[in-house]
Image: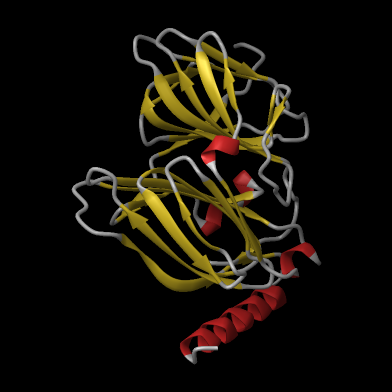
Length: 278
């Protein structure tokens, strides 16, 4: 066995409507600091689709539409339309409400949502904020066999301009057939997973197919991905564990039950104020 990262588990996700969810509250500790990975995909869509105003607290939420446009409104003052390939980071802190609507492209919509927990204490209870970065500002690293889009964090000597609350690496990668992609991440970013959007990849004796998540054994080892006769497009996420307690309501994650209650109260106030037209 090579001295590179290996797959711990292969997850197939739980599909509900157009959303396939891959991280449940019961297994958040295994992927600390990652607490959600959802793949939203629908075909033959004739009108915009999405969720009305709802709330979160205690998390950073990254929205990444890859087919179609995403219109985002939130209580932190962000009112933007993301085109395919743009990135939006919503730091929910002590509570935020938002509305997201996807507009199809040629009858299709597809986007990815990644959440991470915020550090216990002041960070998880800070005021909410939002930032949007267009695709043109997100760096691409062209190599012999691959193209790597550096969504969050750093790949080799290239750093994403997207600000983030904790140390994570979030990459969108395309590899040619019979190609090889290799990366030596920050030694502290020991937790992570791979997700295959299309094609097939091989990692240290394991095979991953489309719509499969491969969680990684925690380690500081390099990552090596290969392809066969099919090329592939896949995601790599790596992070430094927070090593803290997690309490989840499904839509919010905190380090204590008291903070979860405080966040829920603030979200209820925001929803009530919006309904009242304030």
